[in-house]
Length: 481
Image 1: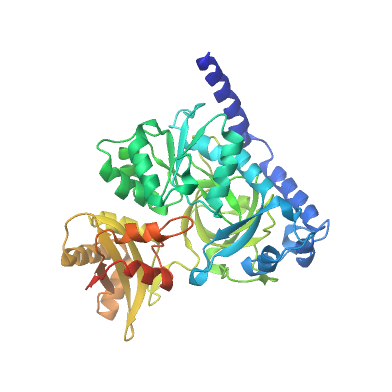
Image 2: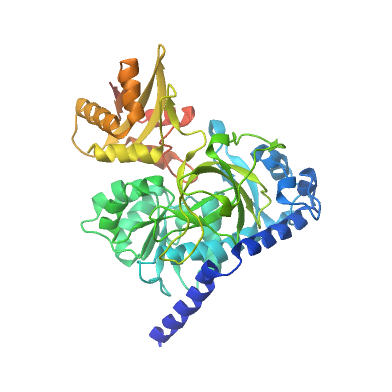
């Protein structure tokens, strides 16, 4: 009987969760959802402030940033937003100077997000190249923050809507510390089917404590280092990593690609995405941009080009929200899933490309790849641009998980940068200096730092904010070259 129920469950789940991939006239349906949202916005004060009328088109509306919404979110009045105020929850995300930003997010958005994008993320993350392996009763593990942070609200929505089908663990996650959740996975990994956590947690906290590889149907992460480390993840988890994309402002927007590991595609049922070419990227710390550069639709992009995302989720108040992220279009579809929807990978934050003397630019994924190619056994790192006199340096602060001298790290890293990056080589030769500094951090520095954070725990590896950087250094003195 259980086998019959599971077969029926998988059939119904696959039909309801994946059929949208091959629907006809995707672009038309996406536009229809957009028109519905704009009509609703035209009746509330937020929409009126944006100049939205019942028949407005998307290009009639300015681009927006958090500052535009701040007053609506902090001191809302009835009639300001898409839904009655009692239908919202207050969520937090990290802001500047350790002051969290406040967002009002509608409960219906969480419900629709989990029902659509969330379930598709879980289902597709278990595709082994031939079939979906998710089954009724599977155990889904998440290492995410509790309290008023986005992941906790999404987890609660998942529990309430899918508790009949899946088990979300740890059961009392909201009362556990980050390390408690790590310990839970180590102790219960044999019963876990799908896991969501940072790559660093998996590779450096968990792998060291588990004697043999774990067997997961799906491993989900938002960490861009999943791409250069995908073979290590596959060796340990028996599955390649699946990367998705979302934010507090927008909820979950994108679903993992199966063919392109580390890639994702936008869920046209939940968001209307627009794109600004990288060379015209806009500082996201704005209120509105009334005369923006031309935006491109999802169907007007070129493979190999990079773009800044402008997002209009259909169930949130955020409209033409200027995201701080640069995404690279890596394919025009996914052959395994038989879809012709552009596939992206996260490239960098629009302000997190580290540039030295305008010669060389490097992002997080490239830095992970360079460290890996150089054979440096790093646990984690953060990179900053520092100056001495008129010279700019790439200064890396890293913690090792193996034996390697400071000089060896310095020599190996510079040698690989010279090989990997022509612009690095040109800068070194033209200006006759080595633009590198290596700073070795004491054991457990990053572990203590992560344990101290609220919200979604992640190391900002490129251009960490000064207050966070000082907090990191506070867990030990560095040995600096």
